[in-house]
Image 1 (cartoon, protein in one colour):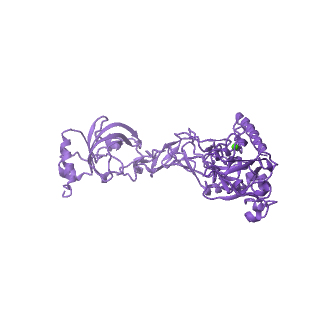
Image 2: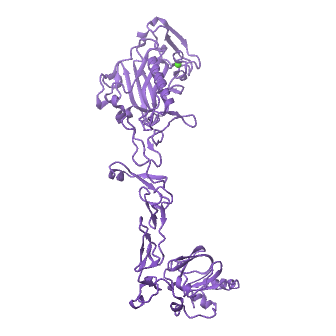
Image 3: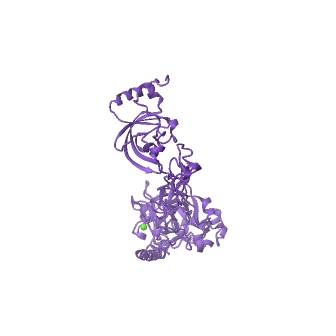
Length: 579
Ligand SMILES: [Ca+2]
């Protein structure tokens, strides 16, 4: 029987090995996921078994007796246990039946085998060198030896030894419980007898094992223990009590790594130790019992022959590498999709990073998966209400009288005003009769009273310094027309007086009304550095740097630096408060 089991396992190994050479059985030829199992293997081989007692390990050494003929008690051969000749290593060695572990005579014994990980046990088999025990129990642990539960009892007296009736049929309600059987307990054969246990044999749901969580749990173990609880009466065996002990030639455990139908291989880990599932179907974990990161569009499930239940990647349009699962969304979607993308990049937003963030519009010339799918709205700071535009059209929300996609022009019949709240005012009826194009500044007539009266020389003393909201040195790097405004790129070099909304140093846009420049209220040249002095209350948008006819921009002179530093220090000491 043992030979048969082992041959069968080898045959299976051969078949599976052949199959895995062609392709991974976890996928079909078209790469569709399939239910798959690691190869069935003999899990005890080469592993150390812990024996509670071993003949020869104590003094004086005991005496063991074995039978040469499996049916003839007269063939008894006895010997004193010599040193290390009956060690538990012989239970799982390569020599099979020729080497035996023997317990100390006249005592019961246990054998404990740690399997190193959670496995599904398909059989446990023992081949005896001594007569088989009258009562034997197999226990399993699912938590690495902390708790033990009965797996199977063998006894000629089930009720008396284990308080269980002998089991003939296992009912469905009992299939997760140990049974007691009278088979495999006869003392004969006197040597070479077999005790084998198949946890699924005779259990009603075994045919539907893949769909039975109860049986999947039932066959799961991390450790096994065999307890030799009672010998047959020594008289019937022709032995003296002090000569009777348990002898076992082989302990075999057939099974496979528990990988939940998501791996066809279970191989030694990196350190060569505990075997690890080679998880497929985008699963991960020691038992392929969770989904890989980013494969959380639906919940993890054990594979079945009907459905591999592979983990599915979240759909984030290539804008995120992270997602989480939401059962609520999964249910709402009709159990289709429950992934929520996290940290959408490239200015995208949404569950699937499928639309643009506020302030950005969709560039329809590019696919949603492009890193440039979303472009900034570029709404005009004065002409638009806020910085948010329509996702698809890119239309900014314009103030009254303002038009264009970015709100940088006055509508027909409107002209630019000095107000930031109403940057375009309706042209009075009488004016519309003139032939003047509404958006062209006529320096001759428009500028007459436009600039403030020239101030003559600027006397920069502490009193004047304190009156200003901000004083800074900036270099102009570039200029660009933006509707009725000029947008300069300015590099702020030093801030001598800081305003309420702080101005940072470095490159930033600086806005100047077109008319203020056209009327020469300000003389500005790209490439030059200026001393810029301004007041907040005159600025239409205090968050921006705006220069207009009320501001001062003087070509920079190095001689001012020392004086301005000195004002700055005095202001810090509170000298401005008195002014
Ligand atoms: Ca052996």
